[in-house]
Image (cartoon, rainbow, N blue to C red):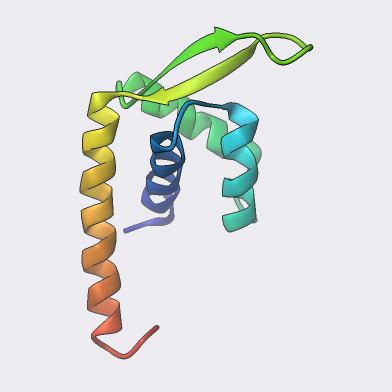
Length: 100
């Protein structure tokens, strides 16, 4: 599982908790992956939309301009389950070597 897959897994997991606007996913992902550029995260969001794993809509931004909110699609939920399974298998394989 490569870094891009881990970013995708984390992003889909964040959206599984409810619709979020870009900055709401950007902050925790940049915290977990500090060497990742903001532009790469937004590119990943766009790519997930093209793959129909996420969709988006505009909503009022709490006193400011409207915000673009992202949400998980049923296809995205399936992808999340696939990536979660891959992650668990990899984690268990690495743990079998005594790595924690």
